[in-house]
Length: 445
Image (cartoon, rainbow, N blue to C red; front, side, top):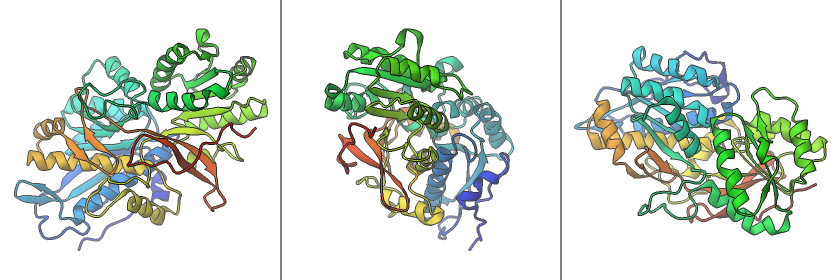
């Protein structure tokens, strides 16, 4: 049996951005795996702002590759082919993505590009390269509307990019789609939380976002929607809450929200930025009753870095959790067993990006097997017809190559366990993801 050189997750950040990780993931392949290997290129942040996203997503991709290889590889016609990963670190830098993807395609000769979840800016460059080389790119793209905005800016249809699972801010699934119901947009979750708790507030809302495609899309959709619901958005006329890259002093924004007596804080920021903002807010006495932050509050390592009890009660939308049921992986793998593998390998609390990485490989394997080919054009055509249960949810693409994810809402809660914080589900429409905690309201002051 082939020996595998393994790189523990904790060491991945030290690997050069162009160093291919020699993960010869033919591990466990039985004798059926006689066909040529299928090479997939994986570009995930292992260092920098989005390392928490990328490290988990890469683990999920690797776990799925190990699982399919142990089952004999991917069935391509009459052959079974093992998958080999070639991995590079984007260093959380969107400007590097296109060149990294070009190198994987032209020098490393990968057949396909695969990626798990990272925020919206971390996909466009790869989509551009995939379109130019006509190579399928299977990924998860963050919020739907900002992603569509990036496509428009790129003046490309990105016909080779497939968003296996991402959340929409307010765009519902098309009529007739089984997902055209509550529980598939962020607006659904947030409106529901406001319906439950809004009457106990003064209906004054602050929105804080990064001045980037994801943040602007967030703000431009939510501000008018909340105003139409009878809430007042503090400083909406002057974009109070837009945070420029590199901002260190948030006192002007905080003072504006305090003066407006903001009781509810929504937003979308990178975790280090929100951590700094929230620490200053605490020091300056800004203490809203409800807080929900996208992007910043997804992963344990991010929120734990804020320090003290700052994460207590912070809410965020969720799309994957180890407690999910009826969500199959390859073989015997389940969300719970995948999370257990992460814990055993890293010694760290669960990272929810592992589900997204695993799902992308499932979707690719399914398309290859239905196409009975690794020819990019045939696999791309097969991807359009995907209708697949995955370790996250059913994946079925719309005409924009996007699959709506079911969403549920969680809050970070302090525990007496070695892992100080847990993200618990406080609201869900979906039987696969049951509620497991009561909401914290109002936040501790």
